[in-house]
Length: 311
Image 1 (cartoon, rainbow, N blue to C red):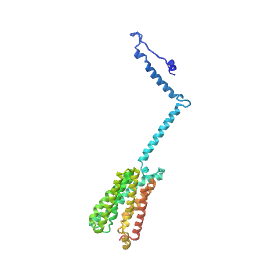
Image 2 (tube, rainbow, N blue to C red):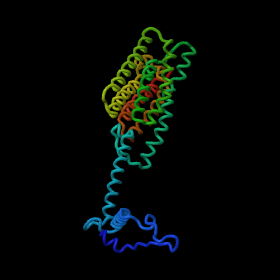
Image 3 (spheres, one colour):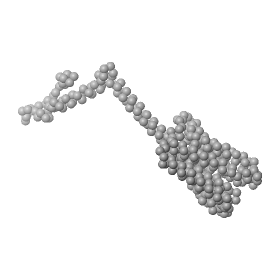
C-alpha cells in the first residue's frame, strides 16, 4: 500500500532558472523519513474515512460504538454525582415524578413551611417577653421552651447533613429564638420548676453532644450519620409537640386551657401539616413521621382549647 501510494503521488520541484545549478535539497525535496511519515498519515486518514478499518465492519460503526460507550460512561458518572449530592440518596428516597402537583409540594410548600416554622418558634415570644417584664411566669409552661432549644439545633444539624436548604433554613431562626427563651425564663424559675427545666436542658444537651461525638469519631457513612441524626431529631420533635400537654392534668382540673398557648397551637397545626406533605413528597420518613405525630398532638391541643377556653 505504501509503495502504491508513492507510485501515484506526484512530486513537484520548482527549480530556479538562475542563480543555482542545482536546487537546495533541504527546501525542495523532503527527505525519506518525512515522506514516510506524511504517507503514513495520509493512509491512516484515508482508512478512517473508508470501510477498510476492519474486515466486514465500517469504521463509522466502530466510531459510533466507541462514542456511545463514552457517552454512556459519562451519563453513569454524572448520575452517580447527582445521587451522591442529592438529599434523596442520603435519606433513601426515590426519584419523584415531577408533575405540576409534586413540583408544587416540593418547591412552594417547603417555602411556606419555612415561614410557618419561624412562626412556630416565635409564637412564645410575646408570652416570654411579658413574663420578663412582669418578672413572673404566671401560667407560662417552660418545658416546651427547654425542649425547643435542643430540638431546633438537632434539626438544624440534620438539615445540614442531608443538605436540604428548606429543613436547614426553617430551623435557623428557631435555634436562636429558643436559646433566648431559655436564658430569659431561667432567672424567673424557682424550686422544682427550675430544677426540672435545668435537668431537661442539660440532659438533652448531654445526649446530643455525645451522639454527635460518637458519630464523628466512628467510621460511619454519611447515610448512617444522617439517619442517626434524623432519628434523634424526630424523637425530640415528637416530645416537643406533646410537651404543651404536660399541663393537661391542670387543664382538666381547672377547666382552663390558659397554660396551652393559642399561638403555639395554631402554628404547630399549620407547620406540621405543611411539613408532613413535604416529607411525603420527598419520601423522607424523618420529616413526615414526626410531623404527622405532631399534627395529631396539635389537634388535641386545639380540642382542649375549644372545650376548656382560656379564662
